[in-house]
Image (tube, rainbow, N blue to C red; front, side, top):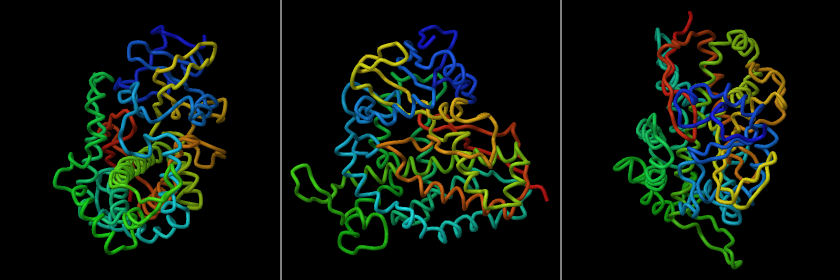
Length: 412
C-alpha cells in the first residue's frame, strides 16, 4: 500500500496522544503508507528520508509562501513578510543579506558571551537539590543570546520566552479550520501580542541604529543594501526587518530550547551515553547532532503543492497541503541503522532536523554552538542527574515538539 485514506493507519499531528510519541505511527507510515492522506484533517504526508529530502529540495512544487504549518496553508500567499514564508527570488535576496550575520565565523565570535550566559544561569543552581532544566536554564539561553545579538536589553528574556511559547500553543481538539485565522494573526502580530514588552522597542531601536550604528544585528540590517528586481539597490523595509527579527525570535529560540530539553531527558534515560560525554567532552558536538536527529525540535514542514505531482502511484493535486515529516525521516531505518537507539557516537552523514535546500535553517550554526556550550557547561557541573518523568510537561504546537518542564535532581 503506497497511500491510504483508511483509518487503520491514522496520523493527526493535532492529536495530543500521537504528538507525545509519534514514532510508532511514523514507522507505520513509512512502511505501509509512504504517501499518506488524511482527508478529514485535509493533508498529505511524506515520511521516508529520501521522499522528505526530495520534497525539501523541490521548491517549485512544495512552496512556503502559502504558509508553513497545516492550519496556515491556503490557496493564496500568506502575505507575512517573514523569510521562512517566502519563495525565491524574494527569499533568495533576503537570505543572502541576513546570512552575513550568521556565518560560522560571526557565530563563533559569540562563544565567550554564550558561555558566560550559561555559567551565569547554572552557577546559582550548583547546590540545588532539584531544578527545572528547561525553565531555569535551557529556556533562558536562546532569548538572552538573541536579545544580545539583535541589540535589545537583556532584561526582557523571560517575557520573550513566555511570548514565544504562547504564540505557538494549541489546545487539544484544535483542528486546522479553528487554528488558521488565530495562528495567522499570531505570526503577523507578535509585536502587538507582546504589548509593552521587548518588540515595542524595535521601531525606536531601528531609528537609533540608522543614526548611530552599533555592533549588532539591527545595525547590520538597517544599513544593508540589496539588489531589487529592477537591478537597483535598496535598503530593507521596516516590515522586512521586523519579519526577520520575528523569525529569529521564534525559530531561533524554539529550536535550542527544545533541543536542550530533549538532551536533558535522553541523557538521563541513557546514562551510559552521558558517561561517554563526561569522559570525553569532544563527543558533545556529535551528541548535539544525535539529539537533533533523534528528537527533531521542528519535525513537520508544511508546504502548499503548486502543481499536480505523482508520488508512490498517486497523484497529489495542486492546492493540496503537504506535511514533510523530517522528524520521521530522521528515524528511517532505510537511512540510519538502528534509528531508535540514542547513540552519541553515531556517524551522522546528514540529518534533516534543520530542513534542507532553500529553507535550510539560517540559524543552524547558532543553534549548534548554543547547544554545545550549554551541554558542556551542564556536564562540567552536573555529571549525573535523574529526571522526574512523572512531572515532565510538553508543549503542543504545530511547529515544534518538546518539553516546557523537565525537573531534574543532580546526583552528588
